[in-house]
Image (cartoon, rainbow, N blue to C red; front, side, top):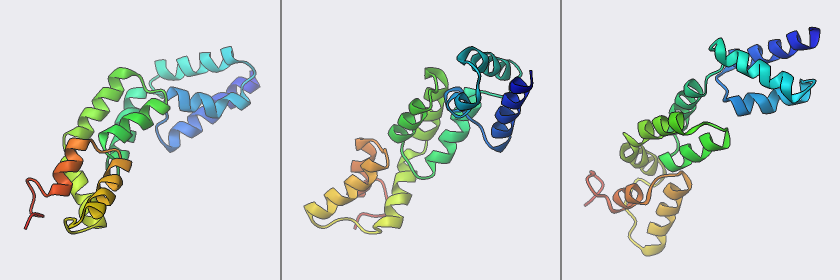
Length: 151
């Protein structure tokens, strides 16, 4: 009983700090759990009481990641945390809604001007690709398409 209470207290303390996915919370609590069954029961109870929600986690984490990353990277990060298909797709769709603008802003902060040589263009493209933007978005940004960057 005491162990369960302390395990639940740990879970609630973690959730009070920020949203967690079920998998992420399970990983953090596993070392303190007497058995996998005990942990699974606690996580199920937290979901029933709406303290734990993959939907809320995906929305919050997707929004936080969208400041610096594209939809491909956001999808990868959420999958790594065990977010299921539906909440993951909603978070990725939300990120896609303004992906071109976010990519342009990151590119503008980093480079500020269109590349004049192939190696410069490749460097700019790699930067955006590493941030998880789609190739269509990357090409539009680097070429200055639909922006004020073209001369």
